[in-house]
Length: 115
Length: 115
DNA sequence: TCCGCATATACCTGTCATCGGTATATACTT
DNA sequence: AAGTATATACCGATGACAGGTATATGCGGA
Image (cartoon, rainbow over all chains, first blue to last red; front, side, top):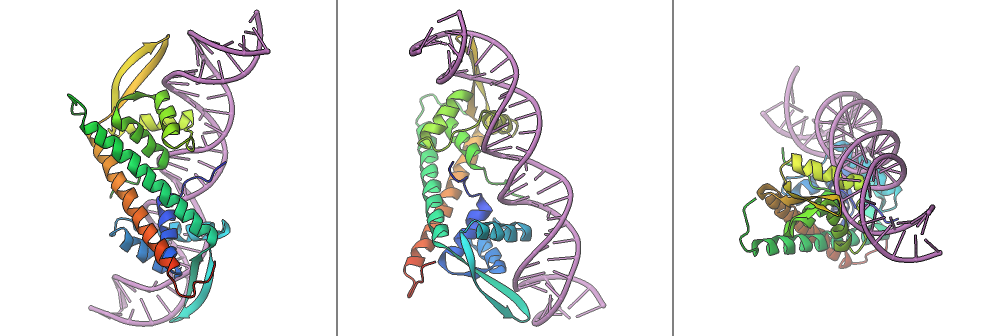
């Protein structure tokens, strides 16, 4: 059996960690920036996703810092996580391509009745 | 509040109906073909998705046929469904682009330690 | 002839990621 | 003193999907 597809929040968390290690809260802001504010991760969603991705071996703890008495736990992609994200990216792109082709072919229909 | 993203099976059902109306079982086969056999929709998933999409106004019943004593219910995209699929396509593509850019920037890292 | 498979729709139960909210604690701002 | 930003963590409810079953017909193989 193949892995189920990553859902949007999880995909975006992985993407946030792709360039460089980040701590949880920074991921939260990064995802919001990446999506032009469209996706605002819930705290519950974020930390649950981080735990799950860590247990699944897609990310791992990079280091921990204490800034202004507050803990920052940095995560980084593992090799497995990097490959997984690359695969997902291919999947997204290919599905977008298929859908676009079909939507275009639709416009060419003769006598196409408006739905 | 914005609509939640379409999940993979639902997106693929919409895509299957984008070019031309199809009945449920044909969608099943079409999705399998589209994804090179990777996604095999469960009957429960398919018909639940068709019901949901119809209730939400993204698809509608095109016509019904009886072939070899078996009912075939054809569905087609509505205008709303067409727009929605086009939006989702843009989203998929942009997320794929962001992720790819980050994955590439990673390879350029100096002294990049293998994860 | 009987079994299994393809076709076709429909329902039901369980799982699990996500949503929305809350808790806890510190620091900065008004 | 109150509110906001930072930062992690837990909890209950929701809802899409997986997996399976039910129902019915037609076809091909053993």
